[in-house]
Image 1 (cartoon, rainbow, N blue to C red):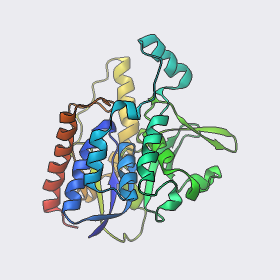
Image 2 (cartoon, rainbow, N blue to C red):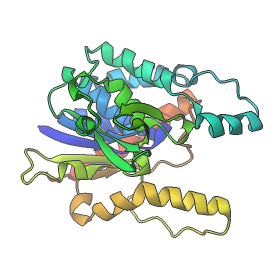
Image 3 (cartoon, rainbow, N blue to C red):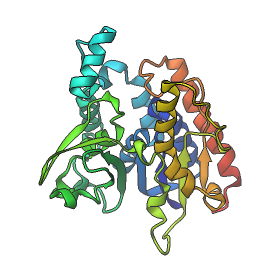
Image 4 (cartoon, rainbow, N blue to C red):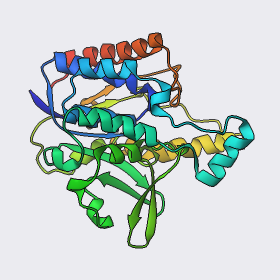
Length: 290
């Protein structure tokens, strides 16, 4: 059966999404349109390009930190702070983009014009103009031809975790606009497919979180305040949107004990994350009534 899919962000925890995709494939479900943010944007782009779960598992389990992170001279704390202050991030993000370019090129995908119309949408945040963007839909506002824009660069924009990666610049009429992680404003863009008056097919969401509401945060220090603000920006929009009506179409995958930026995962931890995603997806799909 054909469905549409939305993958949430979650950084390196996104390995669990591979396991979920494996269970979805085994159920005989095929994605037509896909959307995602951050790690979810990577998954959505690679599936839209034609990667199977088996191919993705091989590619992702073989990837290492050096393939994804640019070399940096800032190895000690003060130098890292200088990099964040002057460069706005520790890593450029160029290596991540090049890695994605290579994978997409293997399937004949370079620009959005190589994909079927509407096959892929990713979310990024324009911090220069204070806007949440859906790519490629919003490119015309920047005088950019969506069909010729690099899919890998758009996904990189969606994955540009603030302070960790340097913002991606795109030229606009008034100068450069800086793009960062779409998860800053919407980490789970299920709403993208809810704007349609009549859905052509079921929409399945895959979200890296628990289904239950998070406990109230204790905000006692400046660090607590920063963390609370970040989580509120990231989750409030989506939490308001996800209602009981939508929960029945969402696979929730709780992932604990793994940091978003833990790029040096062991093979055992990668396998464990994939297994977690598979198990939660299998349990959900057994009872999913679409």
